[in-house]
Each structure stands twice: as structure tokens, then as C-alpha cells.
Amino acid sequence: MYKVNTYTFIFLSLILLLSGNFGYAQLSFCSGNSGDPIYFDDFGSGTTNGPALPSGTTSYTYANSEPEDGFYTISSNTNWFGWHNTQDHTPGDTNGRSLIVNADFTAGEFYRTTISGLCDNTTYEFSSWLLNLLPPGGFCGTGIPINVKFQIWDNTDTVLLASGDTGDIQGTTTPVWEEYGLVFTTTAGQSSIILKMLNNGVGGCGNDLAIDDIVFKTCGDFISIADSSSNSSVSLCTYDLPYNTLLEATPDFSVYDTHFYQWQQSNDGINWFDISGETNQTLQINNLTTTTHYRVKMAETQANLLNESCNTISEEFEIIVFPEVSPPTSDGDVNLNCSTGVLSVTVPNGIQVDWYNAPTGGQLLESNSLNFSPNILGVYYAEAIDSNSNCSSTTRTAVTLLFGEEIPVIEDEYLTFCEGESIILEAGLMDMDYLWNTGETTSQITVSTPGIYTVEVTNSSNCSAIKTIELLQIDAPVIEAINSNGYQIEIHVSSNGNYLFSLDGTNFQLSNIFEIEGGNYTVFVKAEGDCGIVSENYIHFVIPKFFTPNNDGQNDTFNLKGIESFSESEVYIFDRYGKLIKSALNQPFSWDGTYRNEVLQTSDFWYYIRIENQIFKGHFTLKR
Image (cartoon, rainbow, N blue to C red; front, side, top):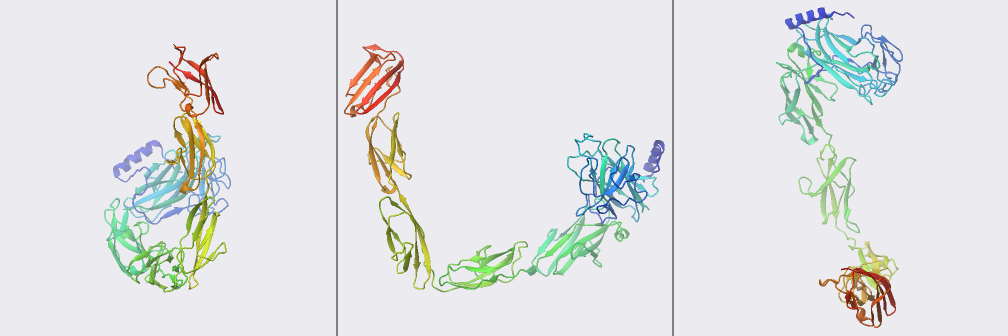
């Protein structure tokens, strides 16, 4: 490769800058629209390496296997030297190849190509996809990053027209392709240039890269296309046809000062052809009936417009015409004789059905349903709607609900009855034939066992329906235990159900806990619906855990309330040494915390209490 020394390069640069022919740009992309690629290299595809690049394309040496330092290969495989093993970048490629370079210690030229047939004073974009092949964390650690310089030279390879660096591209834990581009503008009379990508990194462990999808194309204004309603695309149903509209191309003047137009048309969005005579900024479309794509070629001069290497292409305006939606297929008119009166139709997948009361217009009766159950006789109309296009059928399908005998209308029931009792079950309709699952044939039956009962009800037209009755037995309550917890009485029931509780047999509550002074009580429990009531006598004896004889009116005495309600009782109070402090026999008991008229100090005292056949032992605290 030809090289110039530093002084020569500076001298040439100054001359070019002064003459206005030198351009320098950092890497960037075209901000507007581009034309079709003038040059494109994706390095082909295949499971074998190669072929080698044409002579002069690179300064690196070709290797038909893994490339060592200073070598390159063309391959769909990158699984060497602990590199990422990944596919090429080209979308949809099968066994796609890319340019694999193991950069040398000295700077080299990765890629060079000459582009001819360009137009002067025209902006172009040079781009490529790059991948750092070395993941971090191997024997190289983070590794030396790749760094690539993009350059555009004149066809003599002596005048640098544009240049830019990628900067350091560090290794990543997973393979990441990144695109880089360089934009420049040709000068007067310039029709051929040289594209270069050079090694801008340092040698050593790392600086290994893959290159793919090198593209060179025009760069022009961003050109949007819209209709008079500012739509960028249009979707039509067959009943919208024929379609007329006016399209307008709007450039943003980011590149071109003047604009020349050529409208194009395509039936598939792939193959395009010029529309003869349509070279204005607007395009009138008349009587369109099929899906059609439109775009406009644009250039700054008429000559450039005719040269595919010099024009750009706008955004696409797509007019989609969806196919006609067929009306639903009727499943037949319905006679109410022994029928539920459900109308139905059939449609393909992706089609929904709306029901109306008129062949056109009318009232929407049911949305998005293949079935419709009207409550009056008559003709109803089903309309098909494509879920994707929202286009509807141009005609509706009529389905008729005819007169006939209706099936008996009955309702299922859920009933309860009390344990040990019986209940009457009723079919609910008179003057019918009946068949119970018990074998009985009357409109009513009497049962005393819980379970599921059914009755088939049949009218004079032999239309029948089945009624289901679920019968649940409410069990009578069973008192499992009654406990005293301080001043609270807690009642526990062993059977399941909803129960009410009472201490007087009249006033019942949902809670099973009563807070009440000691005494002899009768506990009542009944089930919901007055299904059974049980009772049990209970001695609720409250023994205070402490008392404070300080004359404040609160807990001043150790008082065994309710003991007087019992026919026999004994009470003995001892101090901690076993000395009898106070006793009582068959009488109310209350102690003020004194012994022989002497005030006793804070301490624990023990009690022995016998009430009829129950004995209570424990201790309590006197607090001063």
C-alpha cells in the first residue's frame, strides 16, 4: 500500500483544505432516505471457507482455516481461539459467511473497493457491520478492543475525502453486531471513489473482528408520503372501492436544495416500476381496486434522477385492499318445538359474527357470537366481520325463529331441612307428567334424606326439561364443652353448621362467648332455622387472680361471686406458709385482705374451694 510521510500528508491536507476539495467527517449515518445499494458485499454463504478476496481487497493474508495474527478468512464459522461462535449478520442467511480478521501487530487494511458511476455533488453513505470476536474473561482478560477507521479516497488514492473512527469496541459476553457508517458528498466531476476500512487498533492479545454487510448507497432528504388526510397508509374493504386519493411527497430539505420526482408503483412491494409521466410532487390515484404500493424516486437534478446510483427512494405508501368477506352460513331455521330457540351460523376461523334485526342497518342485538337466543319469534340477520381487517360482509344471512311448543321452563333449587324431620319437594309446574329419580311420578314428593333429587317434567307436546334440587340437612347442635376463662363462658359445639347461643333461652347471639359474673347458668344452642335446640346446666365459677385492697373502689376484696347460688360450699384461704387465714361454709365469701384486724402485705395466697362435687385449688395475689 502506498504511504505518505507526515510532512507530505500535512502539506497535501493544507492545499486541499484551501482549495475546498477536502472533506472530513466523523462516523454517522444518513438521516434521510437512501436509494437501493450501489455496492453490497455480504461475503456469500456456505459451509466451507473462502474463496479468498480478490487481489488488492485487503493487506491481510488469506487462510483456509483458523486465521493466525495477520491472516483473514471468509467463513460461516468463528469458533477459534476462544472467540464467539456466532452466525454472520446478514438477515435470513443460511450458513452466511463474514470476513474474519485476526488483526496484526502493525496496522493493516481490512478491506478496500472501488465504486464507479457516481454523480458529482451527491451525498452517499458507506456502512458496515462489525463484531468484536473476543469475549472478556479469557486468557487475554478484557482483551485489546477493536478499532476501525472508515475512509473514502478519490480514485487516484491520493486525496482523502472523508474519514472517521469507530473508537474502541470492547468485547462483550455475548456476540453483538454493531453498524457503523460514514457520510460524504462528491465534488464536481467526481464519479469514482475508493472505500477503505483500516485497522486502527493496536496489536497484541485481542483486536480480532468479523466484518459483514458492507453497503454503499445514496443519501438524500427524508421523504414522507401522505394523503390529504395525513395518512401514511390506507386499508380498504371491497365496499370502499373504487378508491380515489391524492398522494404528496414531502422532503425535509436536509440534503437537497432542489427536487425532481419520479413516482413508482408495485403490486407486491418488491418489484417496482416507474409510472409514466408522473414526475410531480403529487400523484392522483383514481379508481383503484387492488392492493398497490407507491413510492417516489427523488434527486437534486434531472440527470441524477435517471441514474440509479444518484437518486434516493422515499418511504412507502401502502394501500391494502382486503378480500371480500363472505356472509355466514346458516345452520338452519329453528322451530321452537322442544327447542331452546338458539339460532346459529358457521364462519371460517378469524371471522366474528354480529346479529341484527334488519338486513341492512338496524339494531345490533348480539356481538361476536356464532349463536343468538332471541326472546320473540321472527327473522334475524347474521353479519360476518374479519377480525384482522374489520371488514364486514356486504350482505347478511337471515335465520328465522319459528313458532312451536316451548320446553317447560323450570328453575333448579337449593333447599335445607332439619335433622330428624322431612320436607316436601315440588316440581314447580302443574298439568305435566313427572318422573323423579326416586321413581315417583307425582308433582310433589316427601323425603327425609339429604342428597340430589331430579324430576323430569314433560308437557303435552312431549317436550321435557329436568329440574335439579340439592337438599342439605341441617344437623342439630351437640355441645362438646363449656369452659370458664376468667369472667368469660366459652361454648364449643362438635357438629358443623351455623348456630346461635344464649344463656336465657330467649336472647340468642352469633358469638359463642359470654362475659358474665359467676353463677349457675343454663346454656342454650340452636341451629339456623330453629333446627333443633339443646341446653346444658353449667356452673360458672369466677375466682379472681388478684385483688387490691386500697379502698379505691376497684377490686378492693377477694370476692367469690355466685358461690351463694350453690347448696354446698367450702372455702379455705392459706398464706404461703400454710396458715389458715380465712374460711367459710355454705355462705357468700368476701375477704378484705386482713387477718385478725391486721392488714396483710402484698403476697400470694392459696385457696381450696369445694362447691358441691367440684373442687378448685390454686393461688391468687394480694397487691398493696
